Amino acid sequence: DSEWLEGWWVPHPQPRGTVVMFSGYAASKQQVGGAAQVLYNLGFNLFLVDFRGAGGSSGSTTTLGIREAEDVAAAVAYARQTWPPQRILLYGTSMGAAAVLRAVAVHGVQPDAIIIESPFDQLLSAVRARIRAFGMPTAPAAELMLFWGGVQQGINGFEHNPVAYAYAVTCPTLLLWGEQDDRVAAGETEAIFANLSGPKQLIRLPHIGHDILLDKGPEVQQQAEQFLREMGL
Image (cartoon, rainbow, N blue to C red; front, side):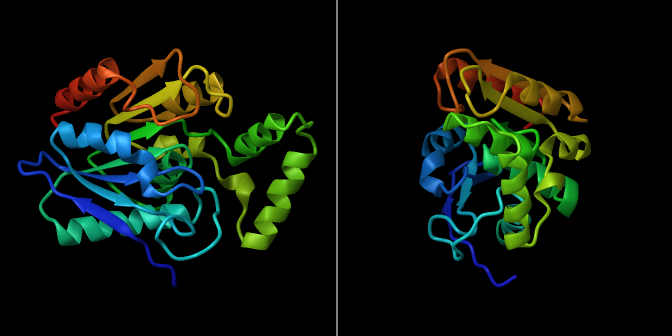
Protein backbone atom coordinates (compact mmCIF):
# COMPACT_ATOMS: atom_id res chain seq x y z
CA ASP A 1 0.00 0.00 0.00
CA SER A 2 1.03 3.65 0.21
CA GLU A 3 2.48 3.60 3.73
CA TRP A 4 6.21 3.76 4.42
CA LEU A 5 8.14 2.54 7.44
CA GLU A 6 11.07 3.94 9.39
CA GLY A 7 13.67 1.60 10.83
CA TRP A 8 17.00 1.65 12.64
CA TRP A 9 19.78 -0.69 11.52
CA VAL A 10 22.25 -1.65 14.25
CA PRO A 11 25.02 -3.89 12.88
CA HIS A 12 26.98 -6.28 15.09
CA PRO A 13 30.70 -6.77 14.30
CA GLN A 14 30.36 -10.58 14.40
CA PRO A 15 26.67 -11.31 13.84
CA ARG A 16 25.05 -14.70 14.35
CA GLY A 17 21.91 -13.39 12.62
CA THR A 18 19.56 -10.43 12.36
CA VAL A 19 16.60 -9.73 14.63
CA VAL A 20 13.79 -7.64 13.14
CA MET A 21 12.04 -5.98 16.09
CA PHE A 22 8.51 -4.63 16.55
CA SER A 23 6.93 -2.72 19.43
CA GLY A 24 3.45 -2.72 20.92
CA TYR A 25 0.32 -0.65 20.41
CA ALA A 26 0.97 2.99 19.44
CA ALA A 27 4.60 2.70 20.57
CA SER A 28 7.77 3.56 18.70
CA LYS A 29 10.87 1.45 18.31
CA GLN A 30 12.37 3.11 21.39
CA GLN A 31 10.00 0.99 23.48
CA VAL A 32 12.01 -2.15 22.74
CA GLY A 33 15.39 -0.58 23.46
CA GLY A 34 16.07 -2.78 26.48
CA ALA A 35 15.28 -5.97 24.58
CA ALA A 36 17.39 -4.70 21.69
CA GLN A 37 20.38 -4.30 23.99
CA VAL A 38 19.98 -7.87 25.21
CA LEU A 39 19.84 -9.26 21.68
CA TYR A 40 22.79 -7.17 20.56
CA ASN A 41 24.80 -8.48 23.53
CA LEU A 42 23.90 -12.00 22.40
CA GLY A 43 25.51 -11.29 19.04
CA PHE A 44 22.73 -10.21 16.69
CA ASN A 45 22.33 -7.42 14.19
CA LEU A 46 19.20 -5.41 14.94
CA PHE A 47 16.58 -3.92 12.63
CA LEU A 48 14.10 -1.94 14.75
CA VAL A 49 11.01 -1.00 12.75
CA ASP A 50 8.12 1.35 13.50
CA PHE A 51 4.70 0.11 12.47
CA ARG A 52 2.51 2.29 10.29
CA GLY A 53 0.88 4.98 12.41
CA ALA A 54 3.65 4.94 15.03
CA GLY A 55 7.07 6.49 15.59
CA GLY A 56 8.68 7.78 12.43
CA SER A 57 6.54 5.77 10.00
CA SER A 58 3.71 7.18 7.92
CA GLY A 59 0.03 6.90 8.75
CA SER A 60 -2.11 7.83 11.73
CA THR A 61 -4.19 4.73 12.47
CA THR A 62 -3.66 1.24 13.83
CA THR A 63 -5.38 -2.06 13.12
CA LEU A 64 -3.94 -3.79 16.20
CA GLY A 65 -1.77 -6.18 14.26
CA ILE A 66 -3.86 -6.88 11.15
CA ARG A 67 -2.31 -4.54 8.58
CA GLU A 68 0.76 -4.31 10.78
CA ALA A 69 1.46 -7.92 9.78
CA GLU A 70 2.01 -6.56 6.27
CA ASP A 71 4.65 -4.28 7.79
CA VAL A 72 6.36 -7.31 9.32
CA ALA A 73 6.40 -9.04 5.94
CA ALA A 74 7.76 -5.92 4.22
CA ALA A 75 10.49 -5.44 6.83
CA VAL A 76 11.61 -9.07 6.57
CA ALA A 77 11.71 -8.88 2.77
CA TYR A 78 13.78 -5.70 2.98
CA ALA A 79 16.18 -7.26 5.49
CA ARG A 80 16.69 -10.38 3.36
CA GLN A 81 17.33 -8.28 0.26
CA THR A 82 19.58 -5.71 1.91
CA TRP A 83 21.70 -7.78 4.31
CA PRO A 84 22.01 -11.33 2.93
CA PRO A 85 22.85 -13.96 3.84
CA GLN A 86 21.60 -13.73 7.41
CA ARG A 87 19.44 -15.82 9.66
CA ILE A 88 16.32 -13.78 10.34
CA LEU A 89 14.66 -13.79 13.75
CA LEU A 90 11.52 -11.84 14.63
CA TYR A 91 10.85 -10.15 17.95
CA GLY A 92 7.48 -8.65 18.83
CA THR A 93 5.88 -7.48 22.05
CA SER A 94 2.13 -7.26 22.73
CA MET A 95 0.49 -6.04 19.48
CA GLY A 96 3.85 -6.57 17.79
CA ALA A 97 3.75 -10.22 18.84
CA ALA A 98 0.27 -10.58 17.35
CA ALA A 99 1.48 -9.00 14.10
CA VAL A 100 4.44 -11.38 13.96
CA LEU A 101 2.19 -14.43 14.37
CA ARG A 102 -0.18 -13.14 11.70
CA ALA A 103 2.70 -12.41 9.32
CA VAL A 104 3.76 -16.05 9.52
CA ALA A 105 0.24 -17.49 9.21
CA VAL A 106 -1.29 -15.13 6.64
CA HIS A 107 1.61 -13.64 4.68
CA GLY A 108 3.90 -16.66 4.58
CA VAL A 109 6.84 -15.06 6.38
CA GLN A 110 9.40 -17.74 7.26
CA PRO A 111 11.79 -16.61 9.99
CA ASP A 112 14.44 -18.83 11.49
CA ALA A 113 12.98 -18.20 14.96
CA ILE A 114 10.64 -15.84 16.77
CA ILE A 115 10.65 -14.25 20.20
CA ILE A 116 7.24 -12.98 21.30
CA GLU A 117 6.08 -11.31 24.49
CA SER A 118 2.52 -11.07 25.82
CA PRO A 119 0.41 -11.65 22.69
CA PHE A 120 -3.37 -11.63 23.12
CA ASP A 121 -5.18 -14.77 21.96
CA GLN A 122 -7.96 -12.92 20.13
CA LEU A 123 -8.48 -9.24 19.37
CA LEU A 124 -11.83 -9.50 21.15
CA SER A 125 -9.98 -10.55 24.32
CA ALA A 126 -7.70 -7.52 24.04
CA VAL A 127 -10.65 -5.15 23.65
CA ARG A 128 -12.38 -6.71 26.64
CA ALA A 129 -9.24 -6.29 28.74
CA ARG A 130 -9.03 -2.59 27.86
CA ILE A 131 -12.67 -2.05 28.81
CA ARG A 132 -12.22 -3.91 32.11
CA ALA A 133 -9.30 -1.60 32.92
CA PHE A 134 -11.80 1.27 33.05
CA GLY A 135 -14.09 -0.67 35.38
CA MET A 136 -16.80 -1.07 32.76
CA PRO A 137 -18.79 -4.18 31.79
CA THR A 138 -17.35 -5.77 28.67
CA ALA A 139 -20.58 -7.01 27.07
CA PRO A 140 -21.84 -5.86 24.68
CA ALA A 141 -19.40 -2.94 24.55
CA ALA A 142 -16.42 -5.01 23.36
CA GLU A 143 -18.33 -6.63 20.53
CA LEU A 144 -19.78 -3.29 19.41
CA MET A 145 -16.39 -1.57 19.51
CA LEU A 146 -14.78 -4.35 17.51
CA PHE A 147 -17.59 -4.34 14.96
CA TRP A 148 -17.70 -0.58 14.37
CA GLY A 149 -13.93 -0.26 14.47
CA GLY A 150 -13.78 -2.91 11.78
CA VAL A 151 -16.33 -1.07 9.66
CA GLN A 152 -14.32 2.15 9.93
CA GLN A 153 -11.02 0.44 9.07
CA GLY A 154 -12.35 -2.03 6.51
CA ILE A 155 -11.23 -5.06 8.51
CA ASN A 156 -12.82 -7.94 10.42
CA GLY A 157 -11.42 -7.82 13.93
CA PHE A 158 -13.35 -10.93 14.97
CA GLU A 159 -11.07 -12.99 12.71
CA HIS A 160 -7.85 -11.55 14.17
CA ASN A 161 -6.90 -14.46 16.43
CA PRO A 162 -3.21 -15.09 17.22
CA VAL A 163 -4.20 -18.30 18.98
CA ALA A 164 -5.19 -19.65 15.55
CA TYR A 165 -2.17 -18.14 13.78
CA ALA A 166 0.08 -20.09 16.16
CA TYR A 167 -0.70 -23.36 14.37
CA ALA A 168 1.21 -22.10 11.32
CA VAL A 169 4.39 -21.39 13.29
CA THR A 170 6.86 -24.22 12.79
CA CYS A 171 10.10 -22.38 13.58
CA PRO A 172 11.61 -22.26 17.09
CA THR A 173 9.57 -19.90 19.28
CA LEU A 174 10.38 -18.33 22.63
CA LEU A 175 7.22 -17.01 24.32
CA LEU A 176 7.48 -14.74 27.37
CA TRP A 177 4.64 -13.68 29.68
CA GLY A 178 4.45 -11.80 32.98
CA GLU A 179 2.25 -13.41 35.61
CA GLN A 180 1.08 -9.98 36.81
CA ASP A 181 -0.16 -9.07 33.32
CA ASP A 182 -3.58 -7.42 33.63
CA ARG A 183 -4.21 -7.38 29.86
CA VAL A 184 -3.29 -10.90 28.76
CA ALA A 185 -4.55 -13.80 30.88
CA ALA A 186 -2.62 -16.95 31.66
CA GLY A 187 -5.10 -19.01 29.66
CA GLU A 188 -4.50 -16.90 26.56
CA THR A 189 -0.76 -17.43 26.81
CA GLU A 190 -1.06 -21.14 27.46
CA ALA A 191 -3.42 -21.60 24.50
CA ILE A 192 -1.07 -19.84 22.10
CA PHE A 193 1.87 -21.82 23.43
CA ALA A 194 0.00 -25.11 23.04
CA ASN A 195 -0.83 -24.34 19.41
CA LEU A 196 2.71 -23.48 18.31
CA SER A 197 3.79 -26.27 15.98
CA GLY A 198 7.58 -26.05 16.23
CA PRO A 199 10.18 -26.24 19.00
CA LYS A 200 9.13 -23.88 21.77
CA GLN A 201 9.75 -22.63 25.26
CA LEU A 202 7.56 -20.59 27.60
CA ILE A 203 9.18 -18.26 30.12
CA ARG A 204 6.86 -16.99 32.87
CA LEU A 205 8.01 -14.02 34.93
CA PRO A 206 6.25 -14.10 38.32
CA HIS A 207 6.48 -10.45 39.36
CA ILE A 208 6.15 -8.63 36.03
CA GLY A 209 3.07 -7.22 34.30
CA HIS A 210 2.39 -6.17 30.71
CA ASP A 211 5.83 -4.87 29.85
CA ILE A 212 8.98 -5.54 27.86
CA LEU A 213 10.20 -8.83 29.32
CA LEU A 214 13.42 -9.89 27.63
CA ASP A 215 15.39 -7.27 29.56
CA LYS A 216 14.09 -8.25 33.00
CA GLY A 217 17.27 -9.61 34.51
CA PRO A 218 20.13 -11.99 33.78
CA GLU A 219 18.10 -15.16 34.38
CA VAL A 220 15.71 -14.31 31.53
CA GLN A 221 18.62 -13.45 29.27
CA GLN A 222 20.36 -16.73 30.11
CA GLN A 223 17.24 -18.74 29.33
CA ALA A 224 16.85 -16.94 26.01
CA GLU A 225 20.49 -17.54 25.14
CA GLN A 226 20.26 -21.22 26.04
CA PHE A 227 17.12 -21.69 23.94
CA LEU A 228 18.65 -20.01 20.90
CA ARG A 229 21.85 -22.04 21.24
CA GLU A 230 19.89 -25.28 21.53
CA MET A 231 18.06 -24.32 18.33
CA GLY A 232 21.39 -23.83 16.56
CA LEU A 233 21.04 -20.06 16.38
